[in-house]
Image 1 (tube, rainbow, N blue to C red):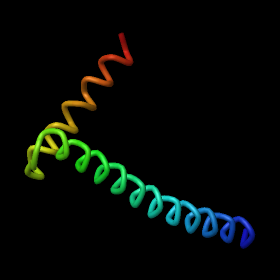
Image 2: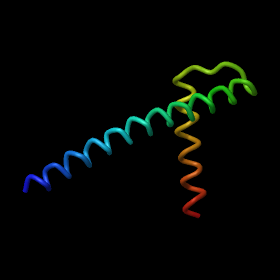
Image 3: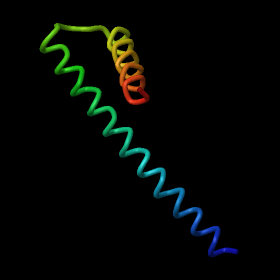
Length: 66
């Protein structure tokens, strides 16, 4: 029983560390996209950038399912 508990604790710690790294990677990717977008089209507000990203995601999802 203790072994199983320790395994679950270890798994939780590994998943937490992975989550932190994935969030950092996600932020880097979004920042890179923002920089590229702004180089081409000029400065954009955070709200507009979020709207563009969500719209882009929806279009990619539609494209994938067709």
